[in-house]
Image 1 (cartoon, one colour):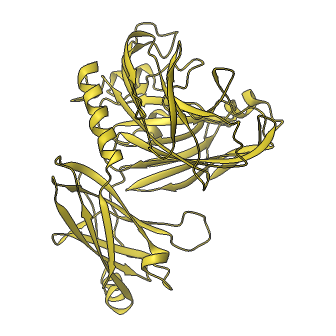
Image 2 (cartoon, one colour; image 1 turned 135 degrees about the vertical axis):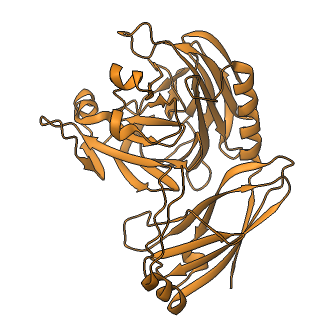
Length: 404
């Protein structure tokens, strides 16, 4: 898609009158090129005393898409974000101008997140957040949300996180790199399918699906069953990244109460998602798990001791459409600080995870669909991609911010 931007004379004047300038260096330590490297600039640390409402980021004199995010809805900007390609063992330098007034710059969105309510008029209004008491019927919660939960999409795929005790990550595959969920809503009609739209490509059953977070008891992954309340929130929906938050308050796990928040982040030009889980109340007896499911048919998969799990195979996501066989690739890469072990059971390739001293667990989810034009078509190429992705996650780019 073509990037679209304009800058008004008023915004330009504001830029020169009330601005802060930063230099951001992004260094790639690997011998391989990296595409769409996420860059996050902490505004509290790097623009203290300023609450920027606008930003302009340039690399080699060219304006690139960026966004400013208020992550906790307190009216104060928290982070500036953008993505950039970096050549092997190279350094990219970006210049950043922060302004107290918003600019008129508009970028074509490459990510999108929403929660929509199911209503009798079939208008499906968007909301920022939903929360249910712990004694609410899980099926009622699930059916009250259009799409059954929060939805996130990028150009390559989309996911939804079920609004119930499972909180499973379900997957939507695309033929064409575009944002389309406002059209199909995860419920692609035969006419839309014939017109080239994607659709739901995964049957999860009782598995961990695509990187769903689970407890683990008696040798099995378990759902987030007993809670005081549970909810979902769209933290950010923007051209460069989108974030969805899943909250479970008062989760009774192994006889003690836990408060948990899961953050799912999608970056522009990415097929993978970052997952950050924060848990309070963990005890030494607690075990947590994630991973990927084994596909229904033709499954080829693995789980490595260093925290990479992957699979490739086929399944029928909608049993009433038995002729719609989908070939799917899934992957999970666990941060080294979060990894506590691996296992394999009848339906899953599992990675065990444990929180650090701050209660944080980190991992990534990666997704491919054979229906994607120019995408992955076999297990060998998908597994090779997962290993490259895992290597990148284990060796992130180094970002240095300097105030000018």
